[in-house]
Image (spheres, rainbow, N blue to C red):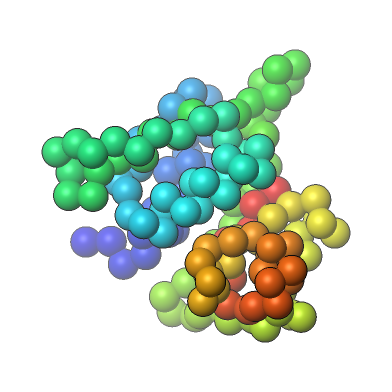
Length: 133
């Protein structure tokens, strides 16, 4: 039984990138789907597909993005911030700036899952799920 599905999600992506895989399959949940959409909108992944298969909630298939010249993954680091043992809640003014605005912090707010920039514009705080750069 998984105690932290978001950490599992991030670890699967990290492992697939380090192994050089083109596609990674992850068990789906609504929160993971929202995080995947944000990663796609920010240009960190090539494409994604939600499949309703034999699994209870389905699968997320993510096509990973690599640099054309160096073959390095586009995502340099995926870091889990808030975890079940220590939740990290921040107000709108306290949200972290990742690499001075070059990276993205994914935040779960009362208005849904969004990036730190969107949360500042909406003037809402929430749980900082992870940092991506």
